[in-house]
Length: 301
Image (cartoon, rainbow, N blue to C red; front, side):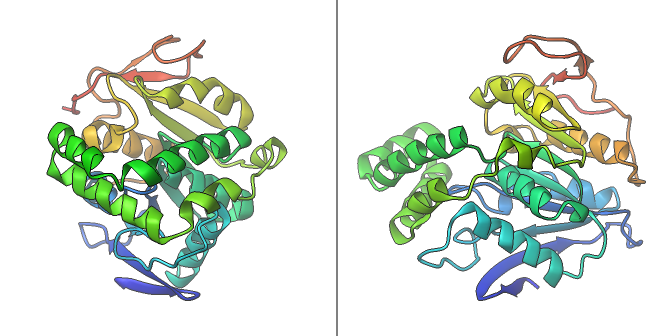
């Protein structure tokens, strides 16, 4: 490390060992999203929290992103799942891992759970969904628009004015990725697992949504589809909940891992201040009693 050869793809990898120097309690693999995302969204948010709790934390830039290689073609979902499977093999991970996927990273995590169920101990999916026909159609529209808008200087100037220069740089980089590769064509052409395949995902799944996100509307569907899935909502946030409120997301991750039997170190209280269980209709539809809505910006005592 920091680079591994994944059958010709030069993959940028970072690994954080437990902060106390002791053997890791478990391995967490963090998978980022598409276009404007990279491993940095984990490295500067929840990764240090997980390492401090005694985990072996494995992060990587997905193909075409960050410092990893950018092949001109090969961006169907199954290629991203191939990369994750190879990463585990090349990293000498010998026990089931806990996958934490943000946005498209969660889609990749679900894909690995279908393909290699024995390799996955649990999934924490942040603002994510498994691949489906609706997902494919939605991504097709988003990527088509992005391919035009993110190369338009007026649009980039608007982004810089409204969201700041850093976001504008990310947007410009995403536009270049779309212009230089077949990603926008490949993602919608991915092989899509049917619901019967998705139901074979037997590992525990925690789906995290911002209450202001459109994705929150799928929570009841996903909870019903997967054998062992529940949803949690972070109040006042949208699709960017990971980077906007890493404290609460980090606490959710620790609580989730503890629930899976991981013996964490340096633990704090089990529930963030301001958390409440409710049948809440805060984001979408009828929500069961096992769903939680968290107040933003709260930390544990």
